[in-house]
Image (cartoon, rainbow, N blue to C red; front, side, top):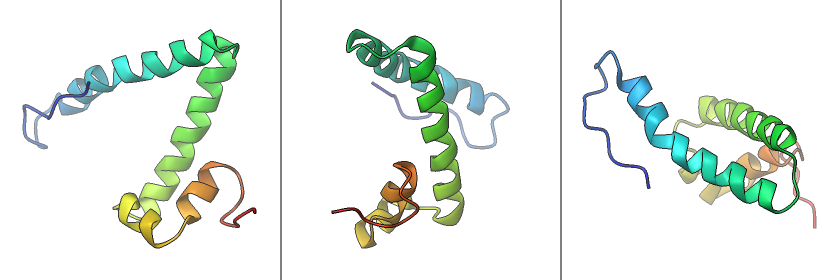
Length: 87
């Protein structure tokens, strides 16, 4: 579970506190993937690529959830389809 921020955006250590909050969830994803046969390093590499694509998507759409409701462009980018839907 990820708790809400307890410090304002301007706090010097907010980014560290956020890392602490998301660490457990990322560990859970890693554990689930490796328990289903994916290698630790290939899973971490996949997570890095997904995060890189999310960073790009969020840069283009500050509120990507709203953007995804309008189209599947963000999801397609994450899944390597360059914005084109596959049927």
